Amino acid sequence: MKLFEPLTVGAMTMPNRVMVPAMVTHLCREDGLVNDEVIARYTRYAEGGAGLIVVEAMAIHQVKSGPLLRISEDGYLPGLRELARRVHQSSDAKIVPQIIHFLKVARTGWRQTVDMLSAAEIDQIVEQFGDAVARAREAGFDGAELHSAHAYTLSSFLSRTNPRTDEYGGQTLEGRLRLIGRVMQNVRRKAGADFTVGVRFNGEEFIKNGYTVEDSRLIALRLAELGFSYLSMTAGGKFEDAVHTEGQVLFPYSGYSGDRAMPGDWLPRGLNVRNAAEVKSFLMSRAQRIPLAVAGKLSDPADAERVLQEGSADMVAIARGLLADPDWPNKVKAGQLDRIVECDYCNVCKTMDGTHRAVICALWPKNTLQAPAHNAPGAAPRWTNGGSGLAAALKGVRVVLNWRKASGAEYYDVYRSDEGGGEPKLMDAVKATLWTDDGVLGGKTYRYRVRARDASGRGGPASDPVSIKTPTPDYMEQ
Ligand SMILES: Cc1cc2nc3c(=O)[nH]c(=O)nc-3n(C[C@H](O)[C@H](O)[C@H](O)COP(=O)(O)O)c2cc1C
Image (cartoon, rainbow, N blue to C red; front, side, top):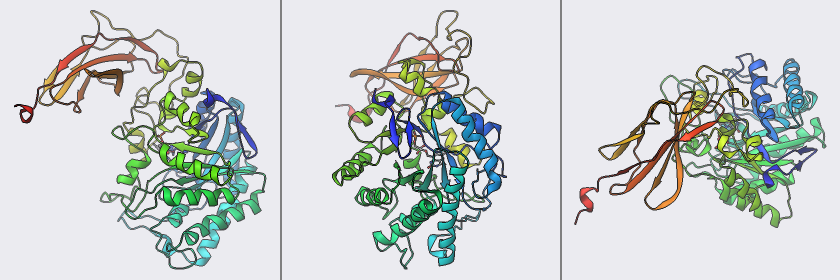
């Protein structure tokens, strides 16, 4: 598979093209220091076979903001060095920190915007990025990634809604690009021309008057010309449409643009691939061969492989899919697709992020901070005493399923197929033995199965299927 072909990115060679994009863990404390849980989270990705691990956003400045890693002073170096060393010891995965500058937010809903920054403060940001990347190099990381996406400072300058009226202003594309341009110039000066430096950017903002791929392909071109080593495309995640909860600081993933950044189960798979393909082909037409990564519901192995085969991107970034199962790369490589703990995009992890609690996956065993071991002893879950007992009942325009507990089960995958045929589709992964389907059409026959899995994804036999016909709505009657 192309997924497992090596790729040279800047000065590093990734053993394969599977990237863990940055995912805040909130495993550190307010001191921002690397601790054992942080190291355990990232070594687990390395052991699971990822090619490139981007460590969660770490701040380049000293601003109060809950449990967030920091790279703003030399005092953080010992912990960061240990993190890089332990990941390198675990596998041949490459590791880069994502480095971030963000503006102030208050519980009242107030937030600082880019037009409030003085020229001196902008100069300071330029210096802080340079210093942070130099520190990443000193800590032994393989590179660094600038966070120029979502709701954060660099991205807010790039935004079409940038309200500044000076040379960094939002009226012109060049004005919007000026800060990232100056930052990169300084990064190269301070961290060297030979250090791998990637950048994450939005392919589309998904806010009113926000930019679309019409601009992001030009932004990508300029980022390539600036000498970045790779581009990583994401989307949305803006403050402009965030929904304020009384007494809480604004969470930039609470509005529609937030849904596009961390798409839930109701959004389509691979939803950023079209934008990535457009940017990639635009770059190629300008002879820019800079590697491009794309994220967004790409945890289906066939989808991930197709992105690479079709040349839409050069790396596939899988966040929640690898949180659910850090062994995804090894399992896909070994053809053990059936062993994958499949992310159902329930977004419990996103909720934990929004409330500054340790980010975990709802499919892991209760009260654990890390993904379960992949080689846990024991047998696959099994149905006892007369099978699963899977039954389906109608409750209005919903179908309600229930079944018996399987021994050794941590959770259950629920599959559905309809009378039109086609492959059974994974509908959900649940810990309870009850599931409600509120997305059926009336007047059709649906067929369900459930499959018990242990914590590492080892599945028992599927239940016998159960079929049910939904009532035809009265407006369909002749
Ligand atoms: C809990 C959580 C934390 C995240 N933290 C970051 C972050 O620090 N930096 C970033 O660029 N993206 C962050 N993201 C976005 C992911 O990197 C990724 O782009 C997004 O989840 C879509 O990819 P997926 O569908 O594979 O999960 C986070 C996502 C989640 C769910």
